[in-house]
Image (tube, rainbow, N blue to C red; front, top):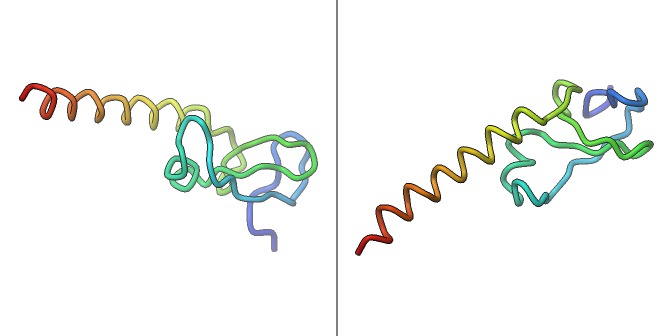
Amino acid sequence: MPEYAPCPNCDCEDATRVGWTWWGGALGPALLTHVKCEECGTQYNGKTGKSNTTGIVIYTVAIIGVVIVLGAIFGGQ
């Protein structure tokens, strides 16, 4: 049994975990089970086999929100 869902682009079952991305550093890909197909290079959710685009947008907006709140709390001293 493969470790990750098959690639939604080419149906290959050989994918590796993505360790770091520009949008999520190391934490984002780990939270979203972000993997990369070894055959075609498509990156997707390794659990569901679907795109992580919605998850990436939500993660990015949440992180920006946290940074803004922390900046307001600690920047106003």
